[in-house]
Length: 141
Image (cartoon, rainbow, N blue to C red; front, side, top):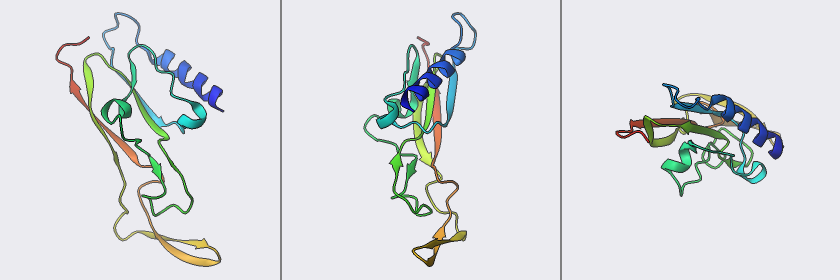
């Protein structure tokens, strides 16, 4: 799985990398990539490509699926499966945070666990969202 995922990301970034001299050098590639650093190894980022979370929060693992924090889920998993990769020239990463980490007020569902119905809160998703904020780079590099 890891080698295939590495090859897929390498191909996607190759396709998304702007040609030299292109007027648009700023690209954001984001989504639920199911990237697992343990099995897939670190993403193959080259050139100007960066992982926005790592740049803004180098000491925070940034789990986007965290069953300890998401009471909607009934299994155990804590990983940063969702990613935002950036190729930036005129912009720079200002911040990135998770969102959708709180239950939706008044919304629940019933889940059968060990032959008993349990009422669980509902969050916007099983994965937390990511909110990336950019700042203008005063001196493009």
